[in-house]
Length: 188
Image (cartoon, rainbow, N blue to C red; front, side, top):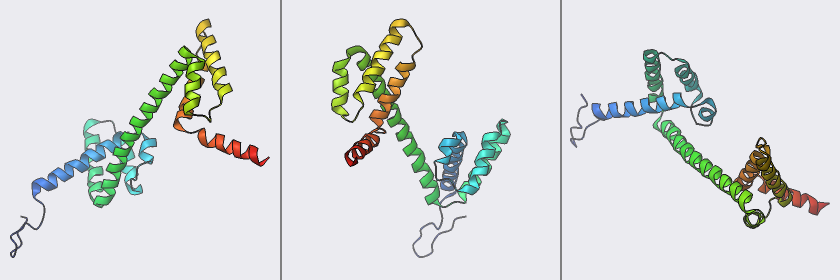
């Protein structure tokens, strides 16, 4: 029994139902962790002593044994502070947002590639207007090669390379490189 405070009449501890709901939330978090690929799991703020339990849950394929291991993992996780579990949940939510942003970036890159192949120099001018640090000559050459591949029914090597170049350009990966190159040229 939970008991009540004699002075205020308030309950001293959470109800059994509340404790069960919290335990099931932790079990759901444990199941999510066990379902993640190792690279994504490494990016999360999971305490080191829980990682072997997560790895063991990933390794087990038998339904009942896996369920038992997930329950054990959840038990170990319930021993952690609420701040640790909240940090893991927040990182998982942020990962979902990051995945959405990555998908949007890929769609934008695909859109620009198709536009460059369809519209040619007009689309290249628009792209360079948005990203003046881009390498005009390299983009023009990749567009030319991709069109030639398409015309001759060749494997899409330049087509893929054009996509990678646009994706890097849109993500800003090349932005710092271009500034560094300009600064180095000014120093010479």
